[in-house]
Length: 288
View 1 (spheres, helix red, strand yellow):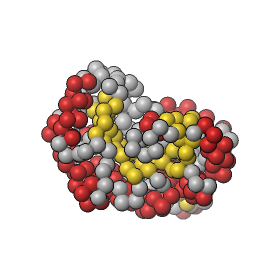
View 2 (cartoon, one colour; view 1 turned 180 degrees about the horizontal axis):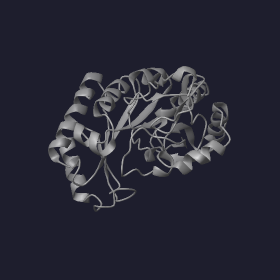
View 3 (cartoon, rainbow, N blue to C red; view 1 turned 135 degrees about the vertical axis):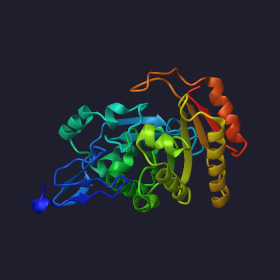
View 4 (cartoon, one colour; view 1 turned 45 degrees about the vertical axis):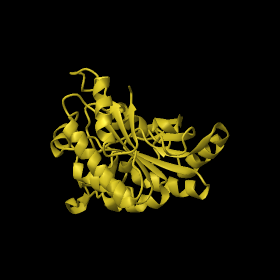
């Protein structure tokens, strides 16, 4: 702890973790150094791959292209169905990252440029929650834009609008998880804030191309009423901003801490897509 018991408050998300010198925040990716909250995971790369843009998923942003996807570690939610829990939650990932060589933003941009010959259009920040280390996203995206590379953010949208304001000028597209449409679902299952995610989405739509993803969990967020309310809210954003916001409705498969139920019935996913199309022009089904 710093002299005098000094505590610093992280301002990235609704948690506002109060940290003393050397503490690690709830997300596992932020700490205090010399009295200042910084990204503990800055430049610590846990995954790097050239992916189809549709895998983000972004179906209406340079379809058919590829993008260099990069992940670090840490997340400010605790989804029991996480597909990347090994880098979002695990102590192993943090220990690995502590020993890993830090990748500089200019080095990552060079890799992206070298992959242009393979169809790469830019850099996607994904796999873990990129906003818990938004400083690396910001520094890299600035350099990427200077070299005419596209920049993509795949996020849960759980961040303050001040963070979005910093990165928005340098991000071309986002896929944001809108995980459900009740506070109870966000609070109980995810440990998150639906309001913060909704506020983030509403602001992001003003700045770049946005697509949304909702994973349908049997018995949790799979009612037609909830899907109707969600799609109506999204339609309101479309009307206010004069643009379509594609919605990806995805099928759940048992994994991580949620193996107590079967995969989502494909018919349920298709039916919820029909409900969403009553409000939205562009709706996709995933994992079916």
